Every structure is written in structure tokens, then in C-alpha cells.
Image 1 (cartoon, one colour):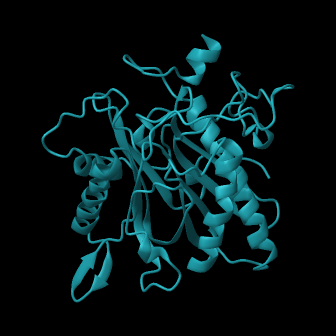
Image 2 (cartoon, rainbow, N blue to C red):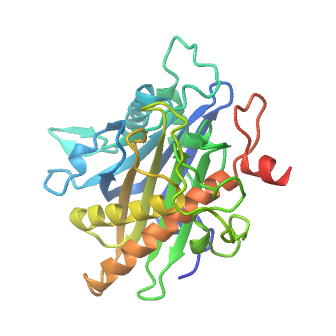
Length: 331
């Protein structure tokens, strides 16, 4: 495997990602969309999720494809970002056709960033407007770090962030990409040092090339540094391989392993860890068993890398409650 051309989830042809950030709010929204509906699925392993329209992503539901996926800050209030996205898509004529109407299908998931020091004393919910702005900004190229849904994210001891990575499989040439908003209870670095837990899967020095430390205490216990419901890592994995919704569900499930490789501990009762999976359907599977096996492994490794990149590329801002990785370890 090797990184894709830009090492972003949009190396999966046809996908676009947009951000909208509010520096004063210390929050934001990230939207993934495409020119036509894409097959989507979801897997939730965290104990405190916040979601919209994820039930319809089960393989036995009527709707098999979505118009966009939304990752947002703002806790439950941030779910309103999806309404802004849906309104804009409907105005553009997008959506599930029913009884002469178009109903955009826009599943969403949120993370908690209300306690990060930003100005949350607003009267009108800002997230619908942020959702519309993120959709309008959707493009193949997009920023990483302290942007979009990762604007106000925090992890154990550090600022979190928004990360992405991609992989091209040698077998079949399938492209796999990952996008993650990292706001975890757990740590992405080992002990008190700069080394990332995701280091074994790093490609081409994309988050510093430090490898793993030579000494750390296996099984060292970390107590929670956040209150219940105040964390969550949100992720999307995508591929150009043609997958059914059931196969996409398995891809999302396999990708959760990447979250656990990059964050220690992961999937806690305090997190809302969730992975969406997307298939554009451009490349038929040659072998439904062998190819699905390789895609699941690639998605997990790719997501681990995306998580580390999001924290590695976080940028300092006035009033930060925690340091960025670069400020703490590079001065």
C-alpha cells in the first residue's frame, strides 16, 4: 500500500470535503459530499454518541445512499448543521425523490466542544449556517488540523484536530481514504512523549516519522480527563470499490480497529466513537472475500494515520486550554 496523490479522503474520486470554522465559537462543521448519492453505512462503538439519521443506514432500510455526511462540533446543538446542509441540497434539487418532492439524506454525528473556552453565549443556533458554509466550500483539496469539526477538539493533554489520509491498494488498485475529527478521552501519543500510537502505520513521515518510543509501560492506566458525554472521535472511511450497504457496514466495523490503534484507550463509555463508511461504486470487486479483507485492513490503517495527522497538524490559538502537539514537543 502507498498513500494516494494528495493523502486525503478525496483521493477517492468523486468525493469533496468542505469546512466551516468559527474562531470565536471555537467550533465548526465538516461536510463530505459528492455529485451524486453514495452508498453509506455506519458503526458506533462509543458509549455516548450523538447522531442524526444513522438508523436509516442499516442494510435492511429502504434508503441505501446519502447525499452528504456531516461531522460537527456543538454537541447535540451541532446536529442542526445537517439541517443547513439539507436545505442547501434541496435548493439545488438534490435528495431522495418521493411524491414529487426531493428529500436530501444527510446523516450527521457530533462531538462535544462546548467546554473548550469558546464563546457559546449565542441566541440563535449558529450550526445551520456553518453547515451551509461547509457544503458550499466542499472541494477536492481541504485543510487539516484546527479546522471544521476539529476546530475546538481536545484529546488527553493536547489539542485535537481534523485529519485525513489515503491509501492505494496494490491488489486491484482500490483507493481507500479516511477523515477524522479527533476529540477523544484517550491519548494519541505514548506517555509523556511525542510519539504517536499510530506510528506503525505511518507512511512517508506524514506525522513526524518518530516511530514508537523504545520504553513505555505496557498496561499503564489512564484515568478519564473529561466528563461523560464530553468527548468523541468521528470518522468517515471511503473507497471507490463497489460495496453494498452490508459490505460498507463491515468496512466501517473494521475501520474501528484503526481508531483503537491510534487512541488509547478508545471506545470508552465517555466517548461517542463512530465511523461512517462510503462507497462510490466506481470499481467492482474482483473477489468479494479477498478484496473485502484487504479493504477492511486498509481502512483501519488509514484511519489510524488520519487521527494522528489531525493532532499533529493542530494549530495554536489565543486562549487555548491545551497545547498543540507542535507547541508542546517542538516549542
